[in-house]
Every structure is written in structure tokens, then in C-alpha cells.
Length: 388
Ligand SMILES: Cc1ncc(COP(=O)(O)O)c(C=O)c1O
Image 1 (tube, rainbow, N blue to C red):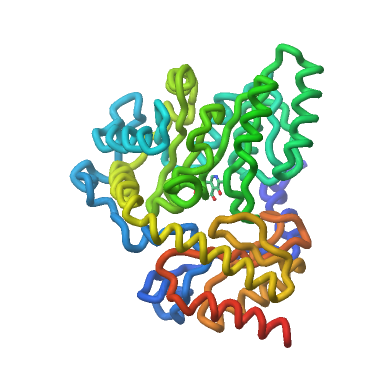
Image 2 (cartoon, rainbow, N blue to C red):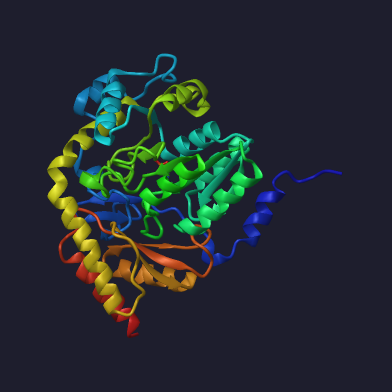
């Protein structure tokens, strides 16, 4: 009997509720921020991108540090002929900035996470990951074949119970804990020293994804793992506050050689494009001069949280520039997104499966470069909607 090899796709699409269907839109950069639907759309202030410091628009586009002369592509894996002087310069700068011994560069954060977890957590491991960890981290655990348990979001008590059980069941087994330092849909951060302390007690390897925190949180924007040597592995992406693209994994000691010898996703993939390495280095070197603006951004994020509380919303947790406005219903969140867009603001509604069903929200991202009055427009538009 013949089987339709495409039936799985038809069935999956038929089951997808209309409110959860995604559509791609094309946005053209403009003076105000972005124009929706190509260059003809209305200009919108961007409250959605992860370019927290505005460096993707105003920072280096790959021509600093000889990026252009190094060429757009590396041509091979870093272990064959793909490693360029610009990669080495970026690695040295990142090591110095983060206080780590070794950095591995990857073409994307997604690839870094899948490759890293597949390399450090094999089928003999128990991995305990925060319930809200990014898809790429979970995919990496699956790829490595480890047993995965999710602990309640930022709940050190739950993590401690699971670590203790894990140790009792497998006294000599390997434990790996995975979390993030700024959860991108919640705006929350864990108690990193607490995580490191628990991992130390139970002999667990601690992996912290700092994708959204680097450049923004921690002393001088160095992330929340700064000064915490018991965070064994730090992941960072360059496509967010660093305003370019690509990613890194930073480690110390024996993990450096381990990654080089055993991380297939590093060894068997073309090295990060030199132009992106150059743009990242240029933007990294701009960070110290942006320190007052970074502080002001964090202060603005706290002001927005207070304004939302005054309007009757639950206080959005956290201290960073990601401020979720909980709506609940997926259709209501989409309606609010369109209402804000009519007011000239681009704020993405986030729906299931990115967040749990019924927990749809507006993900408001505060960024450098937004016009001073835009936050007021945002608040007033939300207020007007409340009174409709
Ligand atoms: C926590 C986290 N890790 C990794 C990634 C993937 O990074 P990249 O966009 O560089 O692939 C993201 C992207 O959204 C993320 O939020």
C-alpha cells in the first residue's frame, strides 16, 4: 500500500490553531527604527529586537579590524584552515572581557548550544535544565542522549531536591545543570551564585547561557557569570547586544582541550564568518564607552516596570531590558500588537509554544536609540486599551 510521505506535514498544519500560526514579515531599517512589510510600510519604533544597545544599526558592519579584507567566509572548519587572525583577536578580547581562559567561536548561538550540550552530556549523564531553557539547549541534550529533567523556573529548592535524588540513585554518575542568565521571554534571572553553590556541593557541571545578558547585565555588562569560576561553561551570542552574529562558548582549564577534541559541532562546521568576527570585536570594544547609556537603559526598564504596576499589571520580574506584559489570551495579545503598531510601535506578541498556552504576552524590549517619548506612547496606548 502506498503511503503519502507528505501526510505528516498536512496533519501537523491542520492541527495548528489559527491563533498560533506564525507569519514571516520583512522589515526594512529606517531612521525611526523599522518599516514593516518592506520599504513602503509605516515607520515603527522597534520595541522587539534583541539589539539592546542599538549596535546592529549603528555599530560596525564588518569593516573594522580587517574584516572585509579577511573576506566574508572562513572557507573551512577552524581545525582545517578556517581560523583567521581576526578570530584569534576576538577570542583574546572575549577571554579578557569575561575573565576566562578559552573561547570557542560558533556561527550561531543555536549551533553553539546544540554542539556544546551534545559534547558535554552523553547518555551516562543526568541533565537538570531550568523549565524555561531555550529550545537549542534542550535539543543539545537530546542529541547527546542524556536523561533530561526540568526543574521549576529559577527554583533552587527544586533543583537541590533533584540533584540530591540524582546523586543517591547514581552515586558516581555525571550531573549537568543548565540555565540562562536572562530568560528572554520572562525577563527573569536566576541566583547564579546559588546555582554555582549547589553545583559545587553535588559535583555537577554548570552551563549558563548568557545570550541575552552579555553586554547588558552584570558589572560593565560582562554577564552574571562574571567573577563566578564555578560556572564552568558560559555561552554567549553576538546577535543580540553585540549587534552582529555568531556565538561563543567560554571555558577554563581541561574543558578547553575537551571542547577542541570532542565538540563535533565546532570541529565539523565552517568557522564563524571573519566579517562577523570583525564586527563583533569592533562592537565589543565600544562597550566601555556605552556604560552610562547601559545604566540609563536599565533605569528606564525599572521605570517601565513601575508604570505597568501602577496600571494594574503584575510587576514584570527581573532587572533587564526585557519587560513582558502578560495578556493571557493569544488572540488578545495579537490584537494588542496590532493596536500598538497602529500607534507606531513594534512590540511582538509571544504565543504558545514559545510560552505556555494561555500565557501569551507582549514582549517589550527597551533598547538604546528608541526616541525618548516612545515609552510614554507605549504606556498611553496600553492605558487606552484598558479603558476600551
Ligand atoms: C537563550 C538563547 N540561547 C541561544 C539563542 C540562539 O542564539 P542565535 O540567535 O545566535 O542562534 C537564543 C536566541 O534566541 C537564546 O534566546
